[in-house]
Image (tube, rainbow, N blue to C red; front, side, top):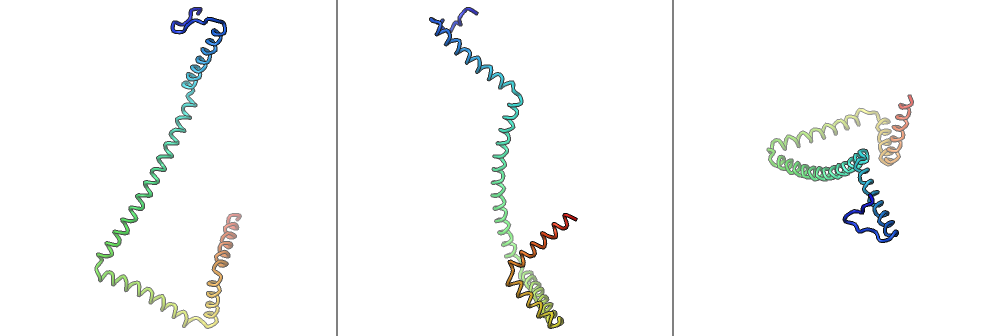
Length: 159
């Protein structure tokens, strides 16, 4: 212990000796801290978990971007395919679809005319008046409907 290390020169004065001792203490302290950090399993596990969490978040962002790109590609491909299929449809099929849609419109119009003929005049007048009022106050009507739904949900929750 009294022998100095072979690679360090011996101190010439007590001040130099104190300085060497202080330097050695600092190095020893750093070494002890490094060894303690290596043996702290909990801290190392937490560090590793934080690192993995960061990697997972980065990968999730990457995958989200890729999914959005793929979704756009699929939408474009579907639109293109639908256009091609529609172009390849035989004219009789197109005519049949148009005819069916026209029949549906005609039946709706017929139902409206029948209601006009069969409903009593006061009912038709009140219905027309209510329709005009509803069209004129859409915002108020939507707000009232929302409030009614909210009250209904509150009552349902309490009961």
